[in-house]
Image 1 (spheres, rainbow, N blue to C red):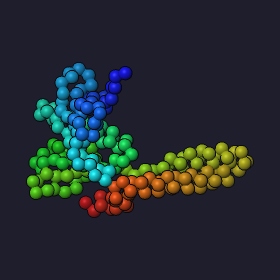
Image 2: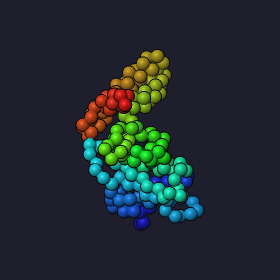
Image 3: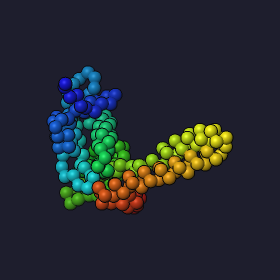
Image 4: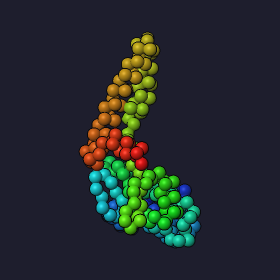
Length: 197
């Protein structure tokens, strides 16, 4: 059976050149309909450390300044963040490349610094999990059903909310501990450093 792995949006298709090595090979970018000419490439190739991976997107000159870069960046980041051990995507862009910087910023990347060669570093951090909210909604529904069974809607509602907050809090805490074990950074530190910049 043929492997048809690719990322698709309404406009674009992004397909890995080597399906055996998704993290180092180039991904080819084409329009989804009509012209199948390659628009450019994207890759996660480079140094990967502590839950952080690099992203490079190169578009052919005639396809630049159309908003495609932002769409491609978002698609690649969303795919990367589906993986449990990926918590940050980093991209470097020349200081003079205003269009590249704009595409990164529109995709949610934040400026992290500049090196001696005037190459700017931007990154986007995976949002922390919010299981508490999910379990709160489930707890309200279960609590209402429990309240009907117990003939006390308020008692069932209270039990459902308390139980859901406990389970959601434990899930969020476990997710934060796992993230810290992979990245070596506290979730609180990451949040604080974002505000400081």
